[in-house]
Length: 307
Image (cartoon, rainbow, N blue to C red; front, side, top):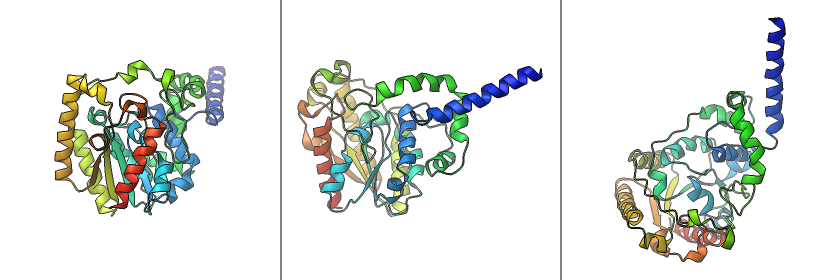
């Protein structure tokens, strides 16, 4: 019995030592989204930027890829420093939760939320303790993320061995190679474009809880005197023209956003209809490439300067 207990104790200690060692090379798996986990690690490593930025970009991959943070900083007369807390695949309900990550920053003036219709499709929440995650980001003592990894060690091992080769590049999907602001510069052109994503036109429908969450985000930021800017980012026009179901859903999304804007108090910029971008600026059906993200950032910077 004592021998078995000793072996279990040794395995327990070795597992925790491996987790601590592996943390140098891979974000701790505290959620079911490796992109969110990677962003938590980025915020921990860039805590000074997190606390000293006057502008936050939030959202899904639309915020992660479609808005070039450095261009916003350089172009806007009002924005000084940006922190991008966006992650791949996040629904509005999850983004609402993630606002906890910037609540310790007392100088935030602007929150920018690039969106597209797929951000409003599912009833999905993070099953994590954000108070403990904030402790980890701030360098405070907490065992919470390590315990999460320990309980999901096989998932962590699988992700660990694939992380560097799969995610640490700017020319494949889904990249997690963050720039200094926390965004991703998507340099996907020519043969690196995946045809499946280039032609992706699934119509997932909408879960109205996400539109309600957007209204709550707006109200929450208004109480803190933070200006909230929501930006609809572009879709590929040729794909919209040849995909009746996808086009119909986007028309419905446009209508729902107009209704939400009328019922809320936030600043809204529809860059899809304003710009009508050509395919040369896209990396896939809903994400722009690096040049496209620079153009979108310039337009958003001009918009922010008018507020």
